[in-house]
Image 1 (cartoon, rainbow, N blue to C red):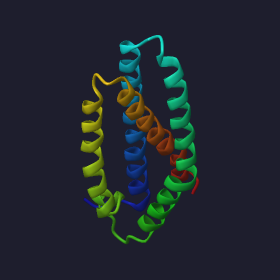
Image 2: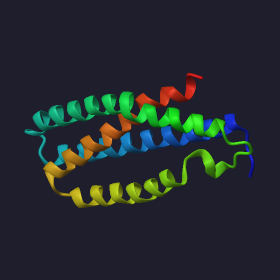
Image 3: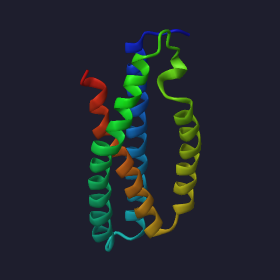
Image 4: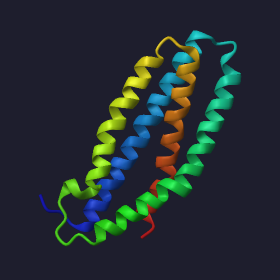
Length: 141
């Protein structure tokens, strides 16, 4: 199915936001699960890991993910007759098909382990904030 370049950029942005929302919810659920295991000592670990996760995510979003978004937008603008599946490069689609199941596996593997729940939750929040931070690139041009 052929779409306009603008539509393709919007589709890429929607996928980007969907990933950010999914990871924010998943990260929050993992932190909540860790809290239910040990409500007393959790605050120190959560404050440190969530703070680090959000901080690292903001930095990654600004300097790494934003660059990736810009390159993707420039690539889309060079496609004469874009198709829906071209919202990302084939390599990115393959990458997503690997990291999404890997993230689901990490969440399942962390179940019942306080420290792993906190670590995977912080990782998810980090990536979520990176996606949200870098998404501003989609709306600048």
